Length: 483
Image (cartoon, rainbow, N blue to C red; front, side):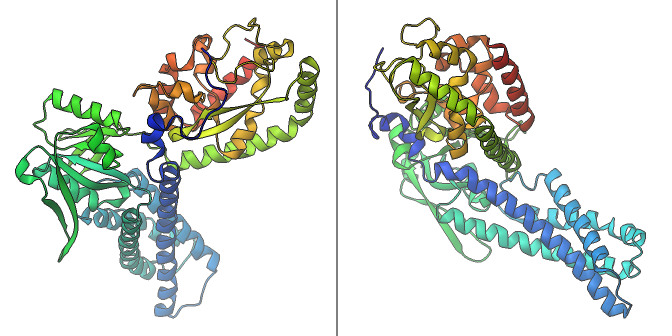
């Protein structure tokens, strides 16, 4: 089934608009990674600075002879790193929702105090004589600095979210007690990256009212209440990214209908439950179970991109002679360009140009289902060899270098295929596409990608640094055997 030879920029807007029209959709993941890295760095520096200043003050108070600064710096760095590790273990960087920030303050005081318990024996081990005085000063100074830094961080992050950076637009379904509680918790917890923009309720008496967030002394924010029921049109008009069902009395049918409306609008759906669930978000004692895109840990995202950049640059340099040889063979085998350039759909529905060595004759429809049989008459003689050994995919290293693709991830598909995606298949667009992945290593690669998405969905749920390395190792052997 051939399609148009060209792809107009707006041809697939109706299908991809829910993914592409989200504000800052592509940059949101990077924003959250930068925020997480900034918070970790700030916590480390503040705690280390607190310990360092405590030693300097203790020397001044005790009127002792100064000792090597590098020893003080070493102790300070160890305590700072230990505080960060304890905060990470306690879930401080995973985020949670609360009506008050008291939990944040309690965690900062408790974990910094635990870390400082090691300061006294460590300073004695390094023969820092003023350790007792320094310890007493650090017990006061480090938690105080950490609490202040956390409050400043939350305040700055909230300002960014209000300005539209790094936050998903949330619609809360239900204006009852739990709905008001959810709105207040989300507004008070900017680290979650969930900004409530509207509340929908079926009660006509509540339409036109507002749910107000109250600070300690003044009114801070109002969220308007709209009339129900939940529809895809309403969610699209509100530019909804996430629908939260806050009414525990919703029947399974109500949840299913609201979820379908959210999926049609390109939004995710979630519900609140008093029971603790795996992979859920804690909001003021309630678990938010969501179908939201799994949030990639900032460390994994940074490492993955670093590997993509370094590996693609290295391979492009090393394989340059092979590129030249393949280009000559392609030109000698059949007339036409060396590279085959085609529009593909990447993360969040972004369309980009994919590069491959041309393996089919000139004049073959550019947008059609890929040949499954290597004996297909559209494939050139050298093209059969390139496809069998996967050498035709090598130019996609350029896509990896540009950031359109990764070494590992779901294969990107053509826009006309994505146009017909159902809500389940659209989950493939949650991550950056890759050159290789689980589907490419399976026997199901003989069939169309969108008809066998189990491998891609498994990868999206379980992706990690070690899984990526394992897939690359298996791909190497896979390609070497030419299977």
